[in-house]
Structure formats: structure tokens, C-alpha cells
Image (cartoon, rainbow, N blue to C red; front, side, top):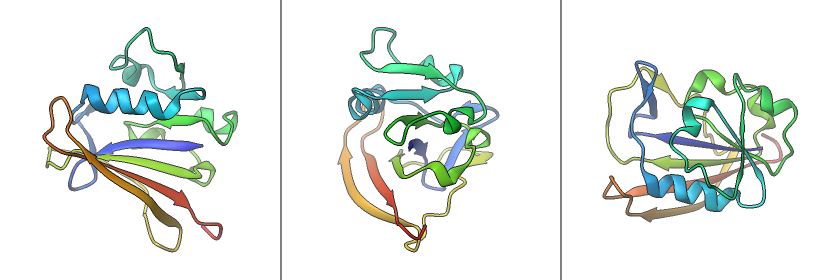
Length: 143
């Protein structure tokens, strides 16, 4: 499973049960990454994606999709409480807002070099953010 998260400079994800921010360019990039695969997410998250997407978007609550999803499928997680069994995550995609937002829900994983390897880092301009940093991590065999 490839897990996708959006985080701020302090690893915040949500505030008062709402996403901190959103960006249509990030949504487009997520759909490009997932082309040809299934993309799981909550009903709350689905609202920010276009209805006419070519990607097979499936609603999954409480991390239940981790039991049925294939290794190449994607899971967009906005609420850390829905993370499920993180050992099933073989790859992570992090989108950094490069800003600080109020937060009460934080990115729950420890990205230690022992468990995760940074494979790629790119920056791009978003629709509502001057700079978004995208990082792709691969789980190490011993992790």
C-alpha cells in the first residue's frame, strides 16, 4: 500500500476535525500518481477530488482498506486516526504545505532512516501555495 499524507511544517494534518488546507494542484498530482490503481480515501476526502476522475476512488473508513488493498494501491489519509496497520504501508508520499497551520492531529509515523528511505524530493507551485514539497519514501526491508 502506498499511503499519501499532506502535512504542515510541524507535521500537522487537521484542526478541529477539518483539513488544514487543500490545493487543487496536489489533488491533480495525487490522481496522476494513482493512475491505473485504486485510490482509497474517506468520504470527507473524496469531496475535494473531481467527480470525473479516471482513477478508481473507493471510500474506506478507519483504515479497513489496508486488509484488502493490494501492495500497489493508494490510500489518501487526512485523519491520522484512520491510519490502520502501518506495517502494510510499503511506500509514503508526503506533500508539505511549507507553512504552519493550527493543528490538533499530527502525522503519526516516525520516518527514521532505519525504517524509511527518502527516494525522491520535488518542489512545485500549487494553486494556493507558493511552494509545495513532495517527498516519496520507501520502507526499508528491515523496517
